[in-house]
Image 1 (cartoon, one colour):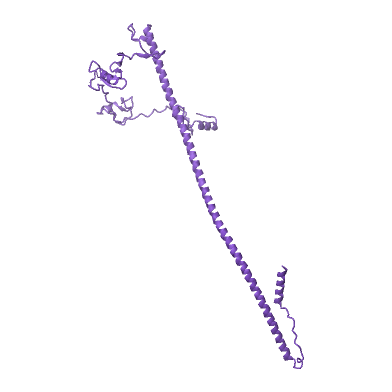
Image 2 (cartoon, rainbow, N blue to C red):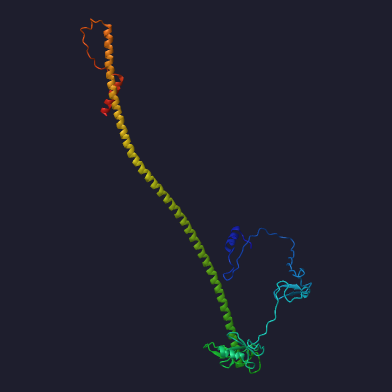
Length: 366
């Protein structure tokens, strides 16, 4: 097929590729693109199809040059090749067509005047032999028996042939079809007698019934195929849905497991942090008490140091005064200091004392 545009060809490919030809058939349509087309100036004859080869001599099977024989199993050979085959079976598949076995009575094994039960298939001889067929009817009450030679059906209950019974269209009862035409014409459907018209009507009705039955069977088979086709589609949709649901459930389960793992990890970290916080609070109280005790000890040590410094300064001052007094007494004569009086001078503050007094004053102001 040739299209005007590439888009049209792509749409045709997408629409028909892989789709069934019909809902009643299983065949699938496959669409392929043509890469190139070569045109020749002179029309050439198409080559003849390749002939199959003979399985015996491996030569081509040409019916114009040699005779060809096809077996029942659909294998072809040259007549000259198959004539050399002594076995009765096929040289390829070894199929052998055996002769159909002749029916015999199940009890006495006679092959004459045989009757077969229409219901169960029992084969027995007639009443003119040993009567095994009628004995089977008496034992099993299967009243219909088919004569193998004439294909006529005998009713043991009605004691007559019933192979010419037909079903009436009016009331649905079984009625007997009229016998052959009295004029002696076997093709009674073509004559104008009443019997011929009845037979013709019966034949027509039977054909109509056969066509109706065939149509019903065909319709039933097609509806069954349609049912199987749509059931297959429903099954595919169901399987796809179940697969999607299972995949979604697996993803959700995996995600929930990951979230649960994260929650457990966070709870574990939270418990660890709470323990650390409690221990830090306990350590904080102990450290605060230790700091307060250290501050008290430091204050006591500072106070003790200051007291010692003050006492040492007083001692140093007294010592300095004594030294100055000794120096003065040595420099001056005894007459100058004989009537003198020793006076105690006020203590002169050293730079350390001034710094200490300023620190203590600053603390008091604070």
